Amino acid sequence: MNLESIRPWLLPAAVAGFFGWRFLRFRAIKSRLPELLRRGAVVVDVRGPAEFAAGARPGSVNIPLSDLTSRMGELDPAKPVVVCCASGTRSAVARKLLKARGFKEVVNAGPWSNTLTA
Image (tube, rainbow, N blue to C red; front, side, top):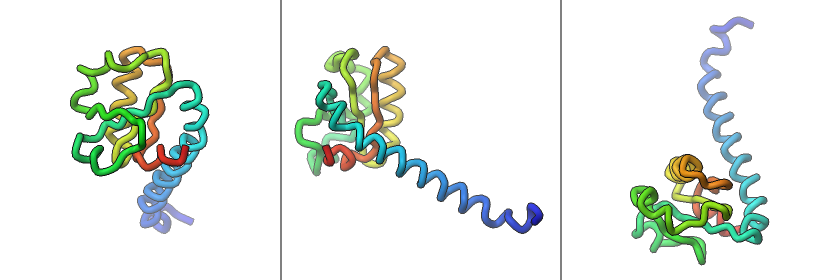
């Protein structure tokens, strides 16, 4: 087998691997969510207000990503924080921002619908 024979399959294999990894990662987080909530975790939805109004986890807090740095004071850095959005991209950015500001346990749940199972 030479490199030229497998080259057409490299990109599709990488894309499939990425989505498989992402699926398994979010599945693992969904299984941890009940325990995090029992420990007092707050679910922060970083979507915009209109997106949040269209559907969100009951009891979650809406802090749009664009407002997160100015509103971090509303959150307790000692408690677990579960961030979510529409796809997991904005919540990944939110997780990094919160961790950089000293929040101890921040979990990216990905799409907000992942938070509904707990």
